[in-house]
Image (tube, rainbow, N blue to C red; front, side):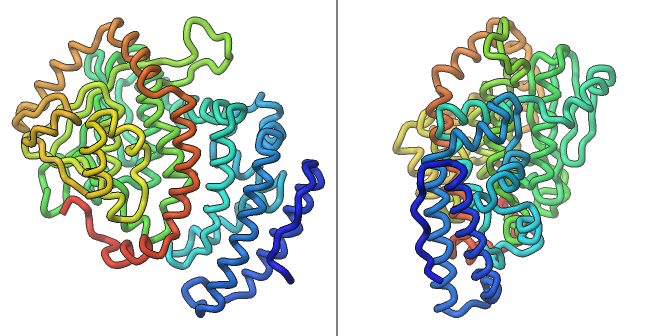
Length: 439
């Protein structure tokens, strides 16, 4: 059997059949090979050839039919499907376009280095949708709506003023909602559970009429080196990445299109295009950084309105050293620091200490650690102002026009998917799978 993909006709039904036939045959040939870690050079070359042919076909299919595919999956954009639901629907409606749920489930049980890399096919799919001016904004809307768990917990938070999730505590004091990250066993490193909890908590703050300002701060650690100290974030959990439990839809894309976008651009409370007065709800946000904000932690600071850091804290984006892309950090950091410092941090791994002059490019106040709580309270009082909310809405429009943001995320969807399965990434993660990055 040749690996050459068929020529598409331009007709959706016919091309869907051609795609299904080719990818089914490719999957059968791949299934006949040993598991990825056990393949010899010739078998690895054949697997790469098979994947390249099928992915080229998927890319050409979506180039022609992305909008029609999205229409079919969302009933003409009348149904909002989140990333995972959209991928499942695509696997059912267009066989071979993205991996079926059972194949993905089998891969999730494997360490990252033992996987076939099926999520790359999802990356091709989401790249095509997000860069479409027709499908992209509607998909972004789906991810900007309140998540189901937040809607379930909304009344409890409204009446009790607190909610305890597995890795996050949310408490309202006066008109300020305090979100404390409590993933203490791994220095507040990010895993899929934390991403789910963070989106839920952010939604609750934005839904709650009594909460005017949101604050995010790391909780107290149990790790021997930082026992009794607060830590903001150690970034992506490398142990979870090594174990294969960091997914494209459940972590990497959900994080960017979910709670980070909601902090930066607001929660979609009415998806109607003619909604009055606004489709989205904005609130000002404060970050309090104890110890360090590494990787995803530093990325998070870029969407906050006011950042207060302890004078012994530091910031870094080590994603390039690890072989991956630091989320939307490449999109946002240069705007904050200028091009040269951004390249030093992202490409060169430069660490910025809170006492460095450049620290004031990524945070607003540097204070002794024991003063952070008082400074947070003072900042919250200043930001509890309707004019602040109106102006941060306008700043978000000026700084991150939606078309530019979605164009970036479209390419991120594919590039990050491929980097997850790159040889250099797998080798680096395997060397120190359990070491916290704060050490």
